[in-house]
Image 1 (cartoon, rainbow, N blue to C red):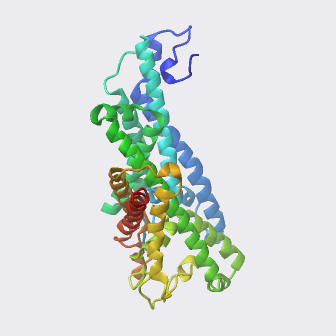
Image 2 (image 1 turned 30 degrees about the vertical axis):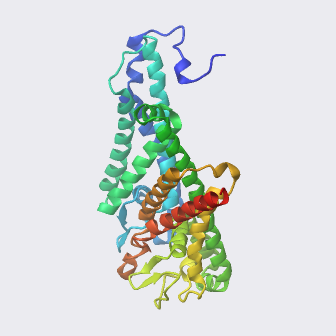
Image 3 (image 1 turned 45 degrees about the horizontal axis):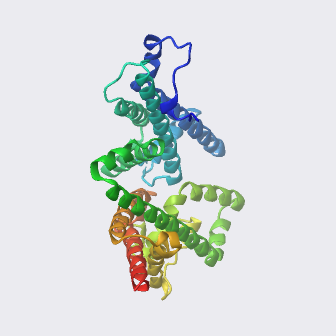
Length: 403
């Protein structure tokens, strides 16, 4: 049976040969057009969202041009940069929008990679002339067009505030998108790695990657459960804050949307609190399970729900990320065949991954003291480190049980 993989596709019988097929299938053209496509999709999402925000704030009598300005600034913020609101520099990344951007860009990279594999088939059939480094030119053109438009638009409308943290977050978004898209679309990276390091090393990395993904999913679930439990336990305080607005129903809807836009950040802050280092509510208040704070916070449900004086049993929650790591190893029989070398690599994945994610969970939330907000620098390593400790503990339990 002939499969439909790119390698088995051949030009149609009426193909006119190299001269007509080459221009539209040049790697640079493929990558650039894919970049335009993903930017169009991004605009189709950002502009309507900005239009809704403009309509909600109709009483402020903002000009229609504000819709486009907000859409661009929101896109820039989703890629990790701080933006100037006029009163202060807003630096907290809307992380759900960041996840959407990574999903769109990684899908574009996957489409480009598959198109280039079709090109290789056409080259083997003699339809296209070989292009040196085609495998790299296509994604490079895609990323170049994407970055040029996003950064150029942000600079053109004003308000984008470059910084080392913002630039680092932008690079992480791009690199993660390229990595995910490439790995999803082709086996070429695996084949190259196997040829260079051998099956044993690649098998070790794959094994560690699976364990790290299980632990990461477990951490997200635990973070979500922690947020739900916090809202349930502090329900009265939360409702009091909402009732303080002139229109409680509209406030509940609006604040719910805001919480959703920052949902990954909310989950990471919950994990940061459980793991010990906690997070800054302002320059004068750091919430941890060990210490109390006496400082006003923004009238936002999740922030006012954070206990100013943690209960005496709160430090026990440090065991939660450890237990997540243990379950990631011993939870099912098929997970238990993990080597100590894979445990070490898993630990590296967890610490590096949590640290990278924590970079998106900090930034200015307002002027003055609110310029310091979000996960403290030690939060990411602590989250990943405790989960890695659990993975090692789970492996140790398995070793003891087999004696």
